[in-house]
Amino acid sequence: MAEGADKESKTEEPSERKIFQAREQGDEPVSQEVQILFSLTAVTGIVAASTVPTQRLANVLGDTLGSADKWPLATDADFLSLLFFAGREVMGFLAPLVLAIALAGFAAAALQNPITLRPKRIAPNLDRLSLAKGLGRLFGMQSLILLAKTTAKLVLIATVVSLLFVRSLGRLLDAMMTDVHLLPDQLRSYLIGLLIPVILVSAVIAAGDYGWTRFKWRNSLRMTRQEIKDEMKQADGDPAVKARVAAVSRERSRKRMMAAVPKATLVVVNPTHYAVAMRYKRSEGGAPIVVARGIDEIALEIRTLAERHNVEVVEDPPLARALYDNTRLDQAIPVEFYTAVARLLTVIYRTQQHKKN
Image 1 (cartoon, helix red, strand yellow):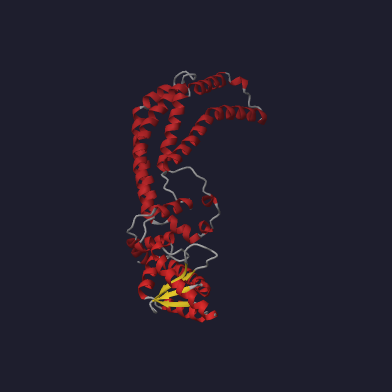
Image 2 (tube, rainbow, N blue to C red; image 1 turned 60 degrees about the vertical axis):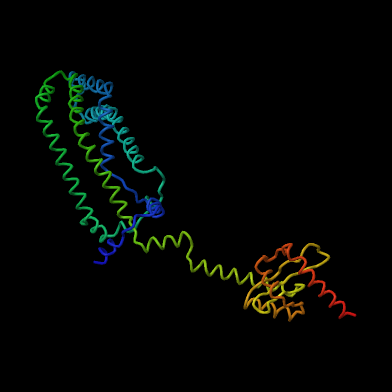
């Protein structure tokens, strides 16, 4: 019940990240029918083009059957010699077929999915040794569907082959009575006539199975809305974590800013809502630099810290608000504030000189 409900909740198409992870795990849509089609086509092509191997096989077969006295079977060694000779000739005839099937399988795999090395696909998996999971796969719905597809395919192909066989039975009997040297060519022609209809049927089956396999694969990767949200969080970063990082960064920046307040030359306040601390040294040249700025609680903290370290605090509400709105931390004040700030600095320097005197 829970599994069915979980499947019903997976209403979203799989993301590119989900598809990529599935492929990395070795989970890719592969249609066995496409591979069978390619193998049948390759075998048919080799059979159709193998006039030289067929002629060689015909000559060997004719010479062997026409001169049986060359192959006495009096001892075990004679039998092994004949067996070795026959095996060598048959392997020479079948080698191109085996190579063609292997290349066809590779081409079919490349057509369906990009050829890449998947170490996880060949890595040992203890789940495959589980008897319970093995029985579940054996008697599960997927196995029943596969059995139904295989049965239907075999019935269809067997029907086509039976019809062709009955239709060509006379030709086959004639071929058995003909010259042994002509037998391979006639069998080759008969085999090609049998394989071509089978290939056409397999092509229809492969096209349907290819589409069904990919549909079933994408359907198995479908995601719930919560999975989509979780993936987006992982890709963009968890908002809670990002907020925490931002808060820590702001706190560190605030501490660095407060550490610069005792070195400031003056602080302009409003009187507690805004505060802008500036540092100006004639020896350094340039315009005054904003070393701290803030509103409300931070402004009050700046003022308190400045008074504690005997930094001049000037109450000028319009100037404090304007400085806060138009300045940035660790940057010089804009040109339009030069006159107003210079006036305050002049007053501060005169006051300091008066105290010294």
